[in-house]
Amino acid sequence: MTAGGNGHDDRDDDDATDGGRADEPRGVAGVDVQPMPALDREGVEALRRERDDLRDQLLRRRAEFENYRKRVERDRELSGVDAAAAVLKAIIPTLDNLDRALEATGAEGTLRQGVELTRRELLALLDRQGVKVEDPIGQPFDPERQQALSHEVVPGQREGTVVEVFRKGYSFKDRLLRPALVKVAKAADDAGERGTDAVH
Image (cartoon, rainbow, N blue to C red; front, side, top):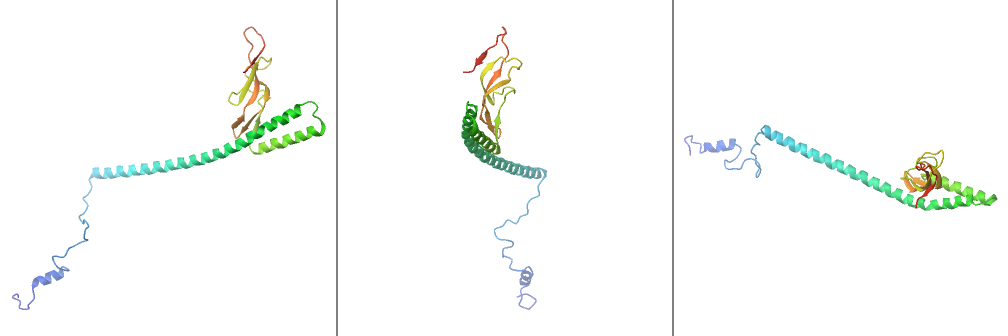
């Protein structure tokens, strides 16, 4: 008991004003409540570099995914073109047979008209699907799209010009289905002789 005579310990009042007992834990248990030390200039620069690196990685991943998506779409489109090209390529020999029938002697009257009508309809069908007939006569020889069966000196024709088409070529959306078989003009040799060089 203190000299105040009220039977009351002054320390109890001090504890009460502090909100609890002196030995009670303060703050959130298990959490470091120490303030984070201020960053110096080097620390700030290090954080900026880390942020920039993470941003670059994100942009690279995004670009890689976009490239992958475009590649998948392109492969899917090419697969469709390959399938269509295979079917259309199988139709082309039918046109060859129709051409031979029209060129045969004695193909007159109703038979010839029927063949011509069939050929026109087939060509129209192929054209609607994107198939183009390549008849390169009079054009410069293109080894990427034509196959030379022979070379011959032809008066009035420049060297390397296609002077005859034995069999037409066909393409589908810039893809060559079959090269044209052609004869190509060549320059006269030193002796001035004319001749034909067959390609075997």
